[in-house]
Length: 199
Ligand code: HEM
Image (cartoon, protein in one colour):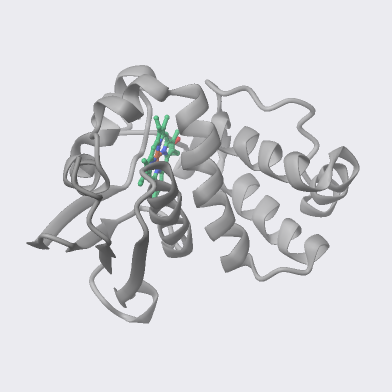
């Protein structure tokens, strides 16, 4: 059966680099033994995640759920932390060239975000990326529209924005204006920032 993206027999899958990044974040803050506890609780018996291989989305969701239980932190908080980690460590350290080519300031980067994953897809051809759109631009704000095949990841987007704010040393505020899990067509975020000091 032909498949448009990273889907195997109707199940969503994603690249192992995501699970590797979850592992990296947990080990960095809590150590190896906590990571082993989280994996056991999630029922995941994968020894080593391979960045370029596909794994069921269930593994990632189960790891986030288990991390929430073991660390006693709400899953939303884990996803926010993961978004920051993704930008500041996974993306910046592993794909610095892609990140710096996408913009020199936070607003530039956000304006380019709708095209970002098409570059990523050159490295990861089976990518099933989210879709982003920007609207209502002002000097200091925009609306970010997030369309996803996957449920429940809005807090991840909040964390990604916070991570970008840190990456550009630009204080950023992000507020969810519309939520798909509350009946909206898609998630919408109001993103605003403090202008960078004049060069
Ligand atoms: C070079 C840096 C990046 C790489 C290599 C990358 C790669 C990926 C990969 C592999 C996935 C999992 C989807 C799949 O495997 O089919 C993903 C998902 C995602 N990425 Fe990126 N990404 C990067 C940067 C970003 C940035 C900067 C943002 C936003 C600020 C972002 C937002 C997302 C979101 C929200 C998802 C969740 C997927 C969904 O909603 O379906 N990513 N990305």
